[in-house]
Image 1 (cartoon, protein in one colour):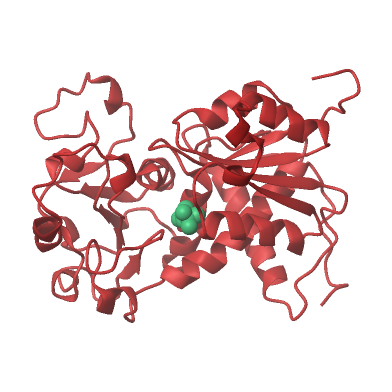
Image 2 (tube, rainbow, N blue to C red):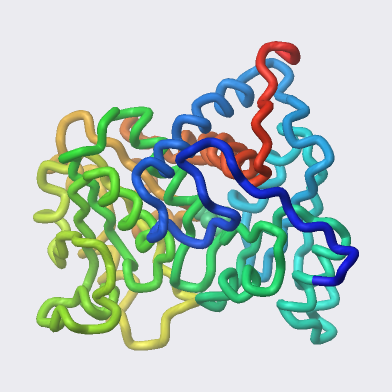
Length: 339
Ligand code: CP
């Protein structure tokens, strides 16, 4: 950083919060997760007002820097910033100087030189957000880095489940699909296990992360994941589930040969109404989106009575409001005046 670049304020509030960046959930403790979820409740109340605007982040600048496509994450960060009165700029790299060869580090430093306080970043390379955080004192929020992590999606998933079922301890949460390439699954594993849920991951062996495949030795480097139950048979996985989350096949991250055919995959791993009969009677059905109906999830299930997929989307705005506010270091969230 140059001498003219202001340094961001130290985060001193609240007590259970020490982050200047959001890179993954593996370095969040339970109190910090609770801090986000509790604040998200207040933000949800702001979001539900007739006029959803408060000046809590006036003068704060958020840059959305997306090297990969996004609908939900990008739009919800944009909305989250605007509801709180921040200035929000969205850069789609396909129409930016990235196409002229500008590096990630230069792009991030350029944004900071324009006084960006927070940079929300999505990139196809695992670790990209960490690299960015090393080269700027703007807050970096990882909006998805390759197959590695998607911490804000995991926090909105935790918030959504908690709002419906209360205490997560002992609740059986089953993630079905392409676990190996899913950054959502990895971040959800950290968050859900931290809150005491029983986490089951289910998919064909070729779509389980190395270290979690049947027969893998626990010493494998990638087994540095939280303790989860591995299942390759979907009916066994769903048995007694409180929550079933279907995950998209990440074909853009797969090399060939992982699946015999899409048809066969759907036959064995699609979340269907018939399969959900094995879950608890009042189970919840989730999907982080975007979904491929007819592949990992049946259309009737996606829009069925157990589905809380759209709630996930709405809650995503509230959770991202909470995160931006916490990163800003501000402590003066307005109350009633804009109702
Ligand atoms: N869940 C999620 O990250 O969706 P988008 O790719 O649309 O942002």
